Length: 454
Ligand SMILES: Cc1ncc(COP(=O)(O)O)c(C=O)c1O
Ligand SMILES: NCC(=O)CCC(=O)O
Image (cartoon, rainbow, N blue to C red):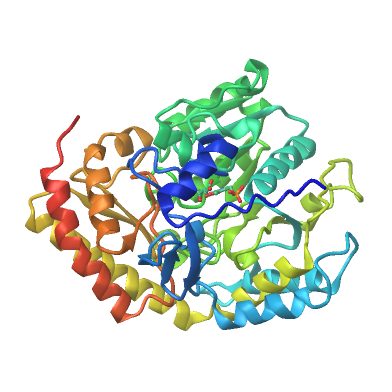
């Protein structure tokens, strides 16, 4: 009889990585995990609780990756875990409608119904279609925009990342930025030509692209606040300008809130009080990460008249065997239920304390840097001023990051393994965890100061 269980075990991260390299490309299932730009061996994580993760060697780290966003309440929050257990007990999925999907959609819609400063009520979205990944959500949003307008072109911003569908990898952020490549092989020139990439926060470039191609543009897609080239918030009023410009030309605005949604902002209301004064009207908004509570779940929402163009009502096809999975909708609902005002307040306090402490440590060592913010999302740039676009984000002493990263890791703090990624705190980052981060900051800052451009 053939036995498929290998029986191999790994005592160390290095052993595990060696095994992983033998069976999967680059030893990873998503490139951003590979430590490619910082060097060294990825830590194989065995567990997470609150603000901490622990690797297979038993080393504990304060985690500032936060599952790349979903871990808003910290790892293994008891309510989220309980919701998962309860759902699992009823079966892992049915490929049929289940009420948990409706519960989650209602919860998301309710959360996005906001009262404006003048007392009027505004629904951020009217309908929501659930998918399994953010990539599917943005891919579908584009198809929907093309289906709605009958137009071919898409405008995106350099340094923005919207997942890995063909149309969206040109000059993308995240792993594409980390690898320092312009896009991906394997995408036909015809497809690539239908995405026009312009610089972020650039009103003139926006006006020009619409002046030249306005009647052929189906949609502009933007991160509600860019956070995949490091954190680069929109200039005040820029999101509204996007909406107004798109609408003036009969195109749609897709606001990608896969990362920002329920962390830094709520649909269409990016920093509304202090930055915009009023919401901007995105036609489609994509979500992921937090709305799945840590399991594979994402979605796209918008006005009913647009969403109803999706099959089975309309002509735009979209589907998914695992879409609206009952375990994922249960964890997502538990996560959102736990995400009240106190959580956001704690997130902001923790993020500020961490960023201020790190900044002080870097300043003490004379390392040129700045901290950029979008709500509680932040990242550090090794340059004097916060960048406004991808070219500026790339113009930094990024060669200091590997030393800084490993300085932190060696002292028990896990950062995103790329200078181009945002850092994520959770409501579980208490004073003890913050103190550990700040203790690590001093030696890490020293390492960054003595790093040399190789
Ligand atoms: C803004 C944004 N959109 C889309 C995605 C893609 O989501 P997923 O990785 O779930 O496919 C990401 C992932 O990081 C993201 O940050
Ligand atoms: N900010 C980028 C991501 O969150 C991406 C995660 C992944 O691709 O694994």
